[in-house]
Length: 220
Image (cartoon, rainbow, N blue to C red):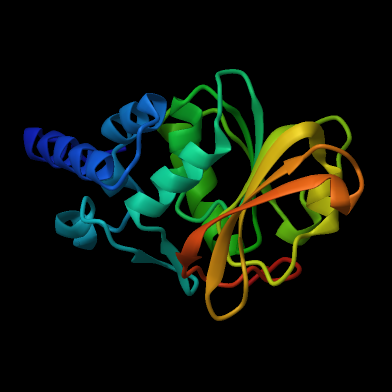
């Protein structure tokens, strides 16, 4: 890793954390992680000047890194505590993965775009984040029984429906945060109080715009 983390970058992160507080983020673990994770390291160096603005930015493969406020909100809704097993659907740049790792989660993350997977897995390892990275179909989650079930599941792309496979991999009492919808998504927090859909507690947290969640792996 040859990129630097300057006093300017650290100052911009402090400003970003202050902005997140004003936007209603109250989870101190989330705010602390956002103050520690170098977002500019997860972006092309040409975007360095924009890295700490509250905006989505392109990361290749027709994907984006989410707004910091979106990352903060999803992380807060998860209500993560250290040691929890978290399944992330949509590794992307790895920034959200790093935030969860900083919060003490044991992260298992799935990416369908091979180009992003091949770039992000070694980046996370080089930065010391011990996430388990997989190339696969996010709608199917991780079928390997040795990894699940999960305390938390976070979906970082817009799903057209609640994936049954993901809910089956979530512990009873666990939480999934997922943006649901096609053109525009509603941010949902689903608490799995039982195996039947009528047992799920579904809370809504406003409208968002994500890239779509797609089936299968993209090996291109």
